[in-house]
Structure formats: C-alpha cells, structure tokens
Image (tube, rainbow over all chains, first blue to last red; front, side, top):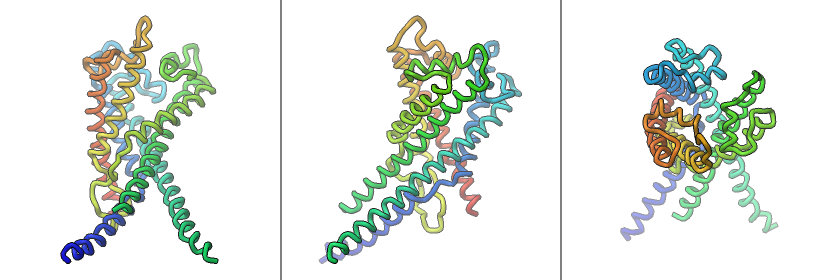
Length: 130
Length: 189
C-alpha cells in the first residue's frame, strides 16, 4: 500500500523533472551575451599573452607578432596589447555569437524533426485502423 | 524509468551533435578564413608559418584550394572534438525553466570542456610532431615555452602543455560562464 502511494507520488515528480529537463535542453543560448563573454575572455587572453611576452622575452617579438597578420595595428608592445585586446574582443564576439547561433539552429532543427517523428508515430496507428 | 532513459539518451545525442556542428563550423570556418586572409594579402613569404599545419593536416596549404581543405579538416576535427567534449549533463547550472527564456551556463562544465579541448589539441599536435621527428621537430610550436614554462615538443612536454591548457581553459570557461550568466540576467531584466 505504502509502496503504491510512494510510486504514485514519484511518477508525477519524475514526469515534471523530465519536462523541466526537456525545456532546458532546448532553451536557446543568448547569442549577444555569449559573444560578449567570449569577446571579453579573448581580449584578456591576447592582452595577457602580450604582457607576458613583453616580460619574458622583450627582445624577440616572434611568434606573437604574427597576430599582426590578422589584427592590423597589433604589435608586441603595451599599445599593441590594447589594440590586440580590441581585436580579441571583436573576434571573440563573432566566435561566441556564431557558436550560439549554430547550436541554437541545430537544436531547433532537432526539435522539429523529433516533433514530426512523434506525430508520424502517433498517426501511424490511426492510419492502420482505416 | 525506461522512458526517462530513452529521453536522456536522445537529449545527450542531440546535445553532442549540436556541440559537434557548432565547434566544427567555428574551427573549419576559422581555419578557412585565416588561410584566405593570407592568400589575399599575398607576398613572397605567404603563409610560411600557417603552412606548417601541413605537418598535422596532410594536403593542407596556404592557397584557395588549401582554404577549402582546411575548412573540411577543421569541421571534421571540430565536430569530433565537440562531440567528444560536449557536456553530457545539461549546460544549465540552475533548474529554473519557468520564466527563463535563455539557458544559463554551468561554469564547471564549460571550464572542463574548454580546458579539455585546448589541452587535447596541444597534446595531440605535440605528440604528432614528436613522432614525425626530423631535424627540428616542432620548432615553431616550441615557442610556446614563453607562455607555458617547461613546455617542449616531446611526450613529457605534451603532458605539461596539456596540464597548462587544461588549467587555463578551465579558468577561461569559468570566466565565460560567469560573464554570460550576468549578461543574460541583465538582458532579461
């Protein structure tokens, strides 16, 4: 008796947990916010790498100077660290935004496909009875 | 319970695929774009450093065709990496779907994911260059010792590099999650 009551209480809770998990799994990432987060992080990485390079190997700008091929105005110098941080933010923003976009699109497509499959599976039984 | 397992399995597969495709597009697109920038800029020593990627990506070169080859390589590697390291647990750290329109990030999951990704790539590339050998194996990569003291292009160095990038990647992932969560809270009011 007690077992049955516990089972009856657990089933709706399990269903609710499942529904919450499903809702979370398909909740999209905020593109702009992820862009800002990745941008700030990449800006810090470029600036810190430049400062570290200046401290440890001030006479030899190689290989960090190669970044100037992709970040016009960048150099292994204090000013370069600032410019690099700006470029790092821009690149990171694009990467973060695009990552969120790609993930959201794939999940949205998966959701539509799953929905369609479930509907088809439901209607298959109905069609068999006609 | 069985139904729950099926749902968990499906969600896990979909999540892994989403991570794989997103990472693949970023890596493939990034390598393709980096190659195209160098090709367009031209010059007598065009891509003499990026071109070294041919050591780990056979067939790649700094050319228009190489950009396409890089796109494919980058996507395949990124897809595999994304599937491998995509968090098995939900990305969200908090269970608050009601009223939440955008997912919150789990700092630990993102940290581990980013750290493992960076560490694995460096570990694999270092060992590949070490195994290939030659007169100066990994001469370019060994410059990383400026930023990662103790790093060198051999097996022990690859472990040191892995440990460094795991730690740095973890910190970066935590930072990304913290900034993202705060920004989303502000954006959603």
